[in-house]
Amino acid sequence: QVQLVESGGGLVEPGGSLRLSCAASGFTSRLYSIGWFRRAPGKNREGVSCSNGGGGSTYYTRSVKGRFSISRDNVKNTVFLQMNSLKPEDTGVYYCAKADSGYGCYEWGFRPDEYDDWGQGTQVTVSS
Image (cartoon, rainbow, N blue to C red):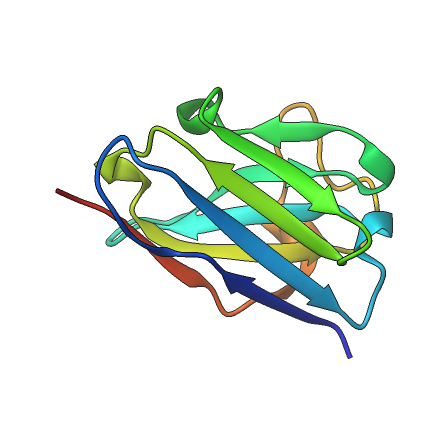
């Protein structure tokens, strides 16, 4: 059974950092694209970052480029999202999701409909 469990969210002041973890089970995460999405209060879900399987392409939405970094620990079957220089507009529930292939992360972004398994989300609040 495929399962994705996010952790690492919390309350942080502007300029602070958090590292989100997405622990995968029931499949070998290094073979699949993994995406991070977020939903801010009152806004639509947004794709934040993704990574193709096998150490392939990565993508960051413009608003987080240079501040967020996606990485994988294939031994632990876990994908991370390191978030630095956090801003209040980064507030939201962050979800990780598994794509239906290892190539679901494109130069221009990624499509939620290609991601078939989702975690329950972790809350990130950036506030002073």
